[in-house]
Length: 144
Image (tube, rainbow, N blue to C red):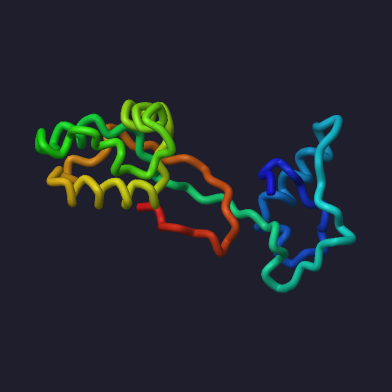
């Protein structure tokens, strides 16, 4: 479900912690129009509903050129085929830091570099904390 959709249910026990309800309050004051969840279809319980979002700070990585330099020459050839990217173009964009690398993918990439003989302790080219909206049950890795 799209993150920009808001929730108008003030009576929900988790509305004070739900990003969707907070955005509803903001939209009600400022926006000409906005998308909302259908209150007739929602059945919030003690934990809210299945659409509840919370804000978390994730440590995103950008680029892995430095890591790539630690690979043995024999492992570097066609290395992109070992990675979980859908195309060679995406591989190069992630490598140069055009896309953020989320914590779960960081762990996967570091493990692949380690298996191929690279030095994972070098780390990614840079890191930046970003706010990410997640369902409370979808916390893949805590940020450090």
